[in-house]
Image (cartoon, rainbow, N blue to C red; front, top):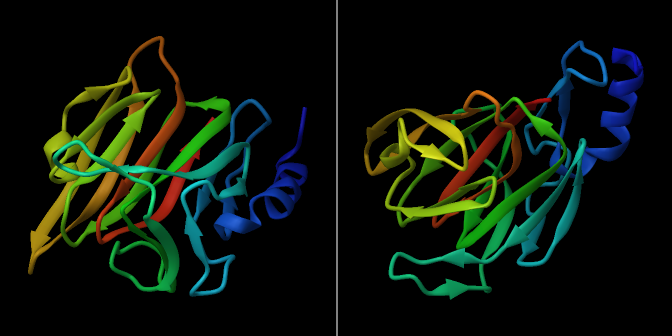
Length: 193
C-alpha cells in the first residue's frame, strides 16, 4: 500500500508535463489528482500524435472532428497564460482543432474539468463513446459511455465557460476521456480513482 507521501513523490516525477498536480490524501486504491498545466512554459505546443506523461494515465493529442463530420490532423494545443476557463490563475491548455485524450491506468470514479468555449464545435468521448456537439452545455444530463455528464456553465460575450463533471453510472467506471474544440480552453483537469 502506498502512502500519500509516496504517491505525491510519484505525482511530481511522472506528471510534470501536464503541470502541477495536487494529490489529495488517499491510498493507492483511492486517490485524486488535478492537473492545472502550470508545469510547462507558456508557448509550449503539441500537435496530433504528441504524448505526454500524466499521473496514472497516458495523455495524447488526437485528431479533431469538424461539425460536418470531416476530421483534421492539423490542429494544435498550446500552454497559454490565460484564465479563460476560470480555473487556476496563470496557465491553461488552449486547444485549436485538436483533442486531449487521457487513458487511465486505473479506472476513475469521476473526472472533472473547467473549460471555456470561444467558438466552434466541441468533441467529447467517455469510455470510447464519442460525440461532436456545438457546445458542452448541450450534453448536460446526457449519459455517454456509461457515465452521466453534468455541465455547470454560464454564457456571456460569445463565451461559454463552466465545469464538467463526469460520473459513471452504478457498476461502471471511467477508463478514458477525450475532449477538444476550436478556440477551446481547458484547466483544472481532475480525477479520482
